[in-house]
Amino acid sequence: MKYRKLGRTNFEVSEIGYGAWGIGGKQWLGGQDDESLAALRRAIELGVNLIDSALAYGDGHSEKLVGQVVREQRGRRIYVATKVPPKNLIWPAQRGTPIGEVFPYDYIMRCAEESLRNLGLPAIDLLQLHVWTPEFLKADDWRRAFDELKRSGKVRAVGVSLNDHDPDSGLGVIDTELIDSVQVIYNIFDQTPERNLFPLCQKQNIGVLARVPLDEGALTGNVREDTTFPPGDFREFYFRGGRKKQVVEHVNALRKDLGDGVNLPETALRFCLSHPAVSTVIPGMRTQRHAEANAALSDQGPLPQETLAVLKRHAWDRNFYS
Image (cartoon, rainbow, N blue to C red; front, side, top):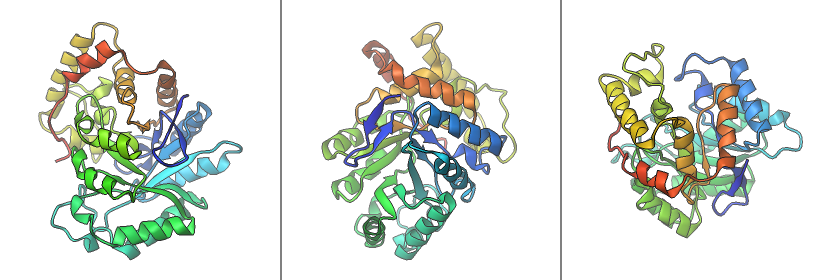
């Protein structure tokens, strides 16, 4: 496993991080806690040292599983990132909504304390706001909360998770120099962070957590037109209507351009790591098999330039979260 600096922090984080949404058990159905715990432990054995969770993932269940495994570690430094959910429980953040309805000071402080209890850890390495809009920039609530949590030692670094397919919404908050990282959707289909966000992050030394590297499963190549998901599973919503057909068409075109024998998930993760602005990529890993396959990719390095040139042609402008 290779490691990269998380922006201006002193965190040396694994290129492959662990996205812990899927183990929350509420929106990604079908997994079992024993399997999730085994996957977490195996990922750590293979060098993964950053785990990204959130208070909203299974109403704290993901954090509890993460904390259980992290507390078991002896001599391994594991960085835990988590997120404060919007108080109004609306994803993504809606412009025109006052910050008092989303991230009031007292609420951020309470959520941080709840996350600490769930994790059972003395401090949170990276606390992020789970949604963001530039309209929050001038508000005092998040600034005071972040400052107090860092000064108290309960939080070591802070960041924001940017709205779906809207990386430019983070440009202003980066310029404040009040955050240490951003989390953003970045994958073969959504390459928009490369235009403005990534250059600014490199200039200001801001860490980047690349989320949804497999486009919620589309870039695994396993989504077919007849694929079904358990009722209530997030993917049932994400791939609703004619979206599976669109995915199949785009994935088939991608496979054709890349040639026979391509490992699509491997290519998708290495695509993210090929950009120097990315500190870590955080795919979900609900099984030991996934942990082993993903962790192995770090040693393979960036994709060749000719492959990246092919992938540039497959950017796809759409938003399945809406």
